[in-house]
Length: 171
Image (cartoon, rainbow, N blue to C red; front, side):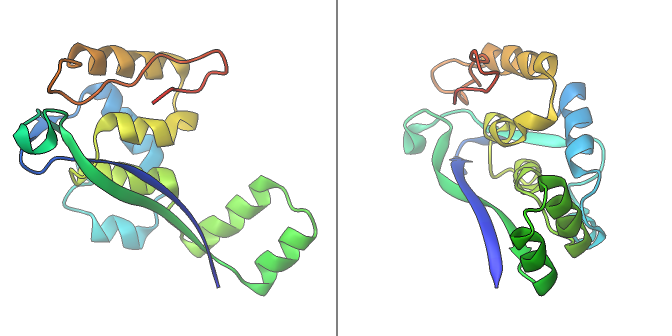
């Protein structure tokens, strides 16, 4: 039995996708999120998990209605249910305890899957930021906002909005 978490995010339009080198703040963020990626996954995605990192965005075209995104793609996290996990859940285990077992199972987290799909050119930076917001500081988030906002013209990828009162991004 598997437990699964999933999110649907906007996908970059393949017809107007452009590649650019990731800024320094994004490189640091990517390294942090992927630091404990299982070795098997590092091997699988070795072509995109090296410096310099490249990001993609949709510039906007007629096929995507000049939005730069078209369609959706899933971001996933799967966790194998075992007797050990079941016992922990029934004993009211902490989130930290479950994370420890998940890492031992070698799972790819939602955040890691989002960053991998970002590097593969499937999703824009603002979609990845929405999923990894708990792993970045407020100043990193605001810097990302500012940089993405510069390109917030009609046909570009939509910028991440400012942090609301609760400290969470509005997308």
